[in-house]
Image (tube, rainbow, N blue to C red):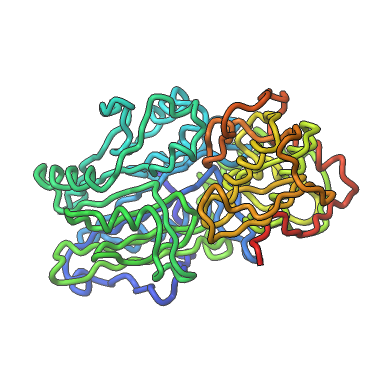
Length: 513
């Protein structure tokens, strides 16, 4: 694997200074041979750098250079390295999606990945396309807890693998979030189920050690959240899994939640490096665990602190050039930054666009479906694409007001609302039981929703089939596609608004009191 490293000018920066421990300079300092795990997750086809809080981070070429620096710090025989990924490689950008992820596979092959967890978004173009990408890739894609609905193992999805690096025999187990059953479109995961991972990891960890593994790691497209430093107040699926383990594992590389995780639970280091190639994990495991401790950190990928990998930069340029004519079309201008947060007016804007596309009374947009911020200034097709990359078809549902009320109860059924709404104002009480939390429900003009009247709502086909738990309850009067995808509806709506587009923040869903 030829690669241009430009090592002399590369600079490594820690994402969590309190957790950063410099790499040992010699085998003696390391307590003997060590294994370095370099991890990424949730790349989502992010070939170009991102502007995050005023700083340019990520981009495939800078990511490659940062990985190369972490590899160069690890010199055999004192250190061996392995590169792994926590899943969701492809989905999210025009250059990746229009080529069904091929450019990502090519770059990951070049970088020398050993394994990747299977992510839920790897299913987005269907199982046939997923299998085609897996055939292209020179690394194993693992998900041990994916089964056919009758419990049989899925032969084309590997559970684990055993890899040799110097004196290390590394058993790697892959996992996929159980939330995939509602995080993927139902048609793309038909016939599959997603089992409890902990018993499976226990079984495979024991088996891998019997097969000669002296180190066992988990690459899991299963996420969680910690405090701002990624070290405390840990919660979420990946932590639930580690707490349930009965067999030892040496490290967990996580993904899916796009958050910073850089902590230890029950003696197991758990790391997750944000998303979109903006950071990497570095975990150093000593061969002799009694002589030295495992060290872990998350490092930012700063574009101005590395010399870009020339091979990767060339391939990114080719991928971007292939879609340049479409990507550069100007759609609108926007007056203010609209961030990708649950409280952002961007979600209201998308729900408004859906409602307008169907000439409906209401629009509902699931929180997980908005994938990027909308930046102030000139907005191009590629910018809007990254907000709505899934090509979800919009459906117009007509139902009685009582059924609409039941549907809006779904929106507030969790610890916080799970969707944005248009055309309606909801007041809810989080202390009430799910299904009876709405205190008041009114239309935009202040009139209360009439249970006996007939209304219409536009949702996408992901939600229609139960995605995010937002399938419509019962039997509506009608449910019809409106023959437009969410991206096109958003573009049409942006073009229809006075320029520059301005969105006023408003609490369409309020907690009572």
